[in-house]
Length: 90
Image (cartoon, rainbow, N blue to C red):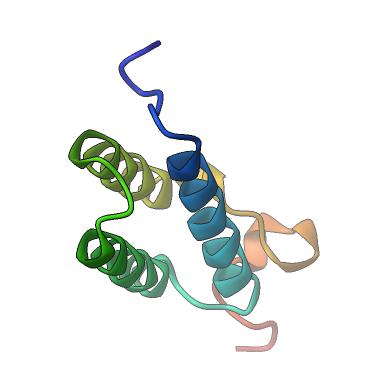
């Protein structure tokens, strides 16, 4: 296993779920800051219910925060990167 792999398949499911939700937010013209708030709440809820091992929780937090900061993680509505965060005509 690499240092970035998860020990529990459930951690992978949570990573994918959070990424999918953030992509939906971005496709509805929300900003990366708003996606980050969503992810912070998601991670907080996971910490509270103790669903993941501390090691997997820490990896998940690190990977999600790194993923949100990477602009290549998102595609704009209709696949156009130029209108990622602003509605046309604004």
